Image (cartoon, rainbow, N blue to C red; front, side):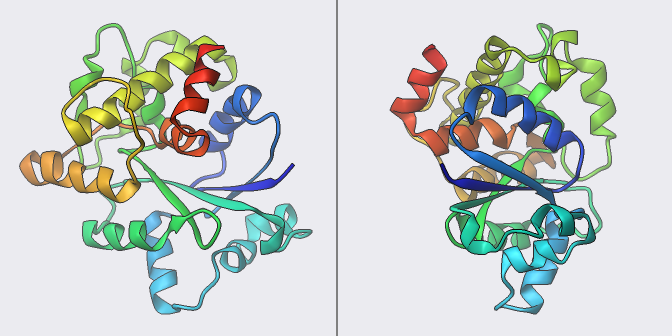
Amino acid sequence: MSNILFVFEGEKTEAQLVNSLSNFFFNENVVIKCAFCAEIYQLHNAISKDNDLDTFTLLKEIPQNKEILSEFDRNDFAEIYLFFDYDGHSTLANDDDLLLMLELFNEETESGKLLISYPMVESIKHFSDKIDFKHLKVNAKENIKYKSIVNSDCDNIYQNFSKYTFEIWKFLIVNHLNKMNFIVNDDFSFPKENYNQYEIFKNQLDKYVKIDSTISVLSSFPIFLFDYYGHKKFLKILDN
């Protein structure tokens, strides 16, 4: 058994999502959840000011994490994963900075692996029979009140993470992985390999952001699972 540290941008929505996921996908591991309580671009600012700054030390100094992480040190975690939103409308948003961050945080056993949801964590449930998910994109550079859009657009069965069944998760995971493959390869089908976060974002920039200032809706959580388990093992899990 090994500890995994999940770092979220916020304290609520992401934790609810992972609690639901953990019921089906993390029986053998202890998942510890904490929050950065700020945007990815603020994390970039903190790291860029101090090249020697340790991710875990930074997290432990955040007031909301003091109790959660008080009994741990970095060696207690085999892996660190950082889940953040793209938040392209933020006043701090900078695509070049994000590319640098994806290069820096690319190893879960070291500083941590950064995973980005486009545009926000709520993208996982932006699904409906009336939506063409393959081509679903939203404005990337304006505050479109995305949470409200998702809650209005998505079917009722996707509203509450705590009520998700394995079949609902499987459906959403497969579609988001198909979408990842579409963004990278223009092929909406289950990928034969995973793509790193830098490559996904580079394709988002080239095919969407730089073309019409949109972003293709995509959740990082299915991509994390696919990367974590690997192609063959994850297909077996989904086939159960």
